Amino acid sequence: MDLGTFDLGLAGWGLFVVYAAGVLTAVDAVMNARTPQGATAWVFALATLPLAALPLYWIFGRFKFEDYLTTLRDFDSEIADGLAKAKEGPLRPFLIRDKRESDGREVGEMRAFDEMATLPFTRGNDVRLLINGDATFEALFEALDAAEDYILTQFYIVHDDDIGRRYKRHLLDAARRGVTVRFMYDTVGCWKLPKAYKRELEDAGVCLCPFTGPRNWLKKLRLNFRNHRKITVVDGRIGFVGGHNVGDEYLGNTEDFPHWRDTHLRVEGPIVQGLQLSFARDWYYGTREELDGLVWAPEAAGADRTALVMSSGPADEIETCGLLYTHAIESAEKRVWIATPYFVPDGRVLGALQLAALRGVDVRVIMPRTSDSVLFKWVPYAYLPEVERAGVKVYLYEPGFMHQKVALVDDDFAIVGTANFDNRSFRLNFETTVVTRDAEICGEVASMLERDIERATRITREDLADKSFAFRFAANATQLLAPVL
Image (tube, rainbow, N blue to C red; front, side, top):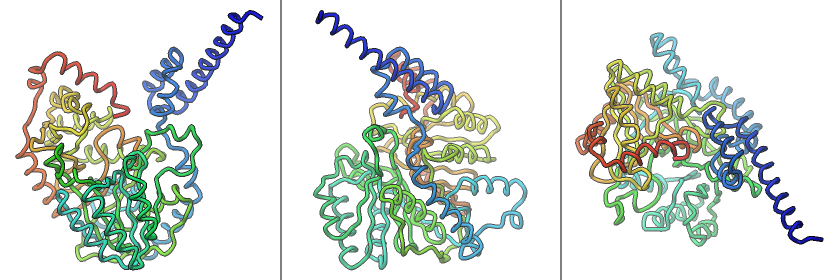
């Protein structure tokens, strides 16, 4: 046998297998890619450079998380039946009866929000803004210390630093006094969290669950899908959601980020059951455990605010997060103010912003000048020519990093949650958003954002033109990475 011929044959077969895998994966891209443009790009890459494109596709190329949808199919069927009964039972006094209370336009606006929501608009809620880390963690720890029955808590990032250890102590104290504590974390966001941190919680009786669920080796490559939610529910009566994770940087207590701007919510009323439902679904995916003993009969809060919860993710049948923002922008008559750390809109949302500005709506986008990611140094400028030409005003927050995810539409809707204004949050991450329809809360959010704008600098196309060619090229190139940013 000629050894050279044998080696060539082996190499040839290896090449054949790689290209065959590339072709088969290209078929998957045609069937499952989010857009025709995305499918075209993946097919071209898989057909011409399969050795490089194959691992990239299985990490970044998929836009649907089939595991989650399949796992929760029966669970969601039971939830749908239970929710239908609740709407005729304990939830009924809190549901908004649009046709009796609103004009035709408002009926349509609210119905669209309701159709996308985890729990539709309800009255009887209290919604309190928590501005920055001190207010957020003070309220959160106070609620944890007052827990009597159970705590459900999940974060994308938890650090083993000063605030992370304080958070752990409050969970440990609750578990030791007999409170059932369930703690869920994202494996990507918490990859630095030491095993000793988790082991101490488990030894005290805290139930831990990484957001992974049973996966084979191939599915473990899908790092694109992350649980970006930050939810805490105490006794089914008090809930928290917003931009804060658990880490010293979220208090502005690190050398890299001495000033951190963020917004969270503390909520009471039937809206808490929406947060609880979102957690229960995630917990079932991670553990296959249905949570018993949770409080599902809502109680009216002291305030009477109208609000809903929308939990979105890559298992949704429709892209609810992007549609939520598109609908909110299209419904605006006077103003749309958006505060986001990452502004990477898709064509649909970008068009809605441009059209809103063209019809005379005051459209403002607030972003940080300083970012926690080197790629986002150029992002504020990437879409600047397109939006500024239509009349959108873009502001860069100056004091430090701004991480809040907030939107205000007229005096009608205030939106606060975990979702950034980017493709990852719209399509790839599991997110939770609260929409409040209340003039007083909208006024508080407006005042908050006005203070942020006072500490920001408006930028224009002229500012981009004054930058170097290398900077302008990097800004344009950033848009090419938009699908995975």
